[in-house]
Length: 182
Image (cartoon, rainbow, N blue to C red):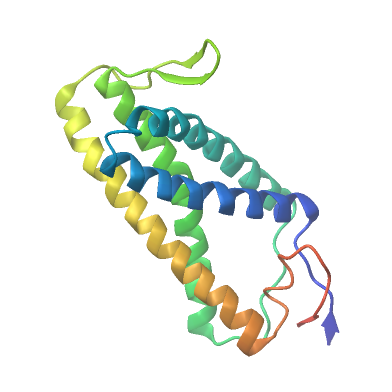
């Protein structure tokens, strides 16, 4: 039995907005640690974008809870189903953890997180240089992990869209195309 099964519009908008923001953040993060000339400008972008990603991730989780995603195709092997589930749990976990660890890291360093104009977030941890020294490499490790998961997610999406053509990819794009098998 076939039917069109798609993510709802808010899920699709949040997905693609966050995809762009996360890719931008990963590149900004790399540029931030390699460019002294643009460091302050990049940090000024990185901080509010991280908080924006945190807010959008929370909205995504709420939307996902209220509107569960479409079922995976019934002929998808069990290991791929498990891999999809685990990778999504890890992606959501990292979309929440990375901004929170960044916020905690900056709090421990005593740096404010300015969002817009005079709006500054409160610290979530006390100022503590040893805590900062622990959180800084953790933030980097989580960022590399997220980058690897994003690449795996992209590879899986391309496999579904170009090889399997099972409707998984089309369920997240703006235009309705293929049906997914039940």
